[in-house]
Length: 54
Image 1 (tube, one colour):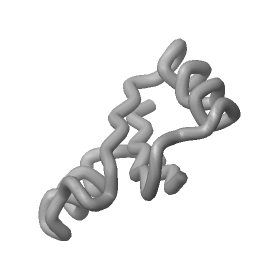
Image 2 (image 1 turned 30 degrees about the vertical axis):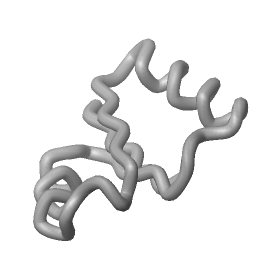
Image 3 (image 1 turned 90 degrees about the vertical axis):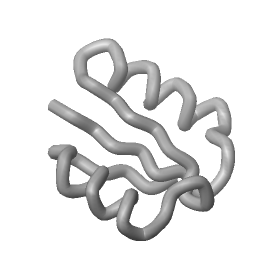
Image 4 (image 1 turned 180 degrees about the vertical axis):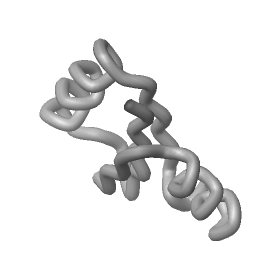
């Protein structure tokens, strides 16, 4: 499964643990919200199976 994390801020310890667990069994991409344009975010969302906002 391809999982996309869109981060509003850096992950706290709980978030880091969850991300690492997902990475163990899935393809994970993590991006900061302010680093991508709306078009880039939309393309990423469309190319992943699951989206997590943190």
